[in-house]
Length: 397
Image (cartoon, rainbow, N blue to C red; front, top):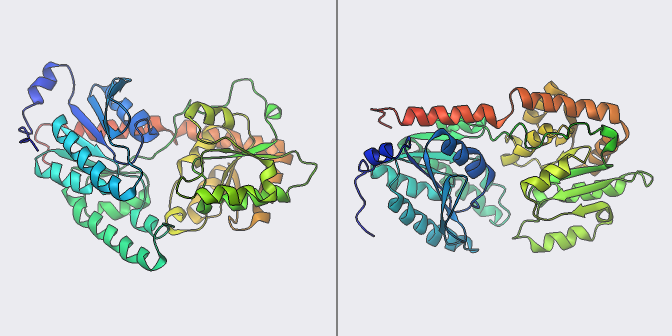
């Protein structure tokens, strides 16, 4: 590997080029146009005047919305990704010689530490509670999950003080990291105010008798219970379940198994859906389903799709977890269910489809909450403030 240039050699050149500083976002997992990394953070920083580069698995080099994309190999094998792809991310990161590096995957922690050792400022963007998430990983044997989770927590605990800042998506995650790194900032993954907004002039009665689930389709996200619940609905209720997302690629047998259920006859599976398709779906349905199973990583999470449903002005049918209950009951924007009880889910779906006044009021309250506070525009200010502080002269982290 070529000798790395001085970490301070690019500063004057960047200022002369009219940029506030050079920033590189790193991922070995996420696609180039992943919403948080690209559409929210990178584009916000580029608009603010930073020179943005994203190093990710991608097919080609390109510049989109003033963000330069540098590709690394897109490998299917988990082992290959965590070795070959991670190494290539490190190589390209060194070549980029940025002022700040912002990485998004736990498997890049070593890369982040090496960049810190080089004298660079580094932000670790934490999307989920990794140790609790590992406890739910279907591809790990049950006996191995706790040791792997313990090791993952140890790595994050030991590494976190070294980073210049840690951006987390929930207060629960923040509690764990703030004990080790005082520069821990909660930057929620809230939706854009306008992206999913209901169409002006469209009446509730114009919506189809359907509910939707947006995002990856997985066993632990309640796909079986959702489909079985559709079978329990009255025959005279012309209800449909719209799936705007693909089945987990590592569980190819799951789709055929779920498709054999009777309720599948009431399902429209759209497959992978881009943001425009998701918006079109949510503007036409009468509720959004969020019936995750009560596994450790989900119970304390704040799923983006909860707020996306609210942003779209539709009720949220959600698992009755304490944190989710607090949000939904306070706002009055949805119905809580037992995610493992198909009859509970079916009753909630039937209620929102047959009580349009109550359902539209729930949707309206959710939409108002997003407009007031649960939106990316408020979180973007925190992101820009963090970068302003990191670029202040004399900032030592």
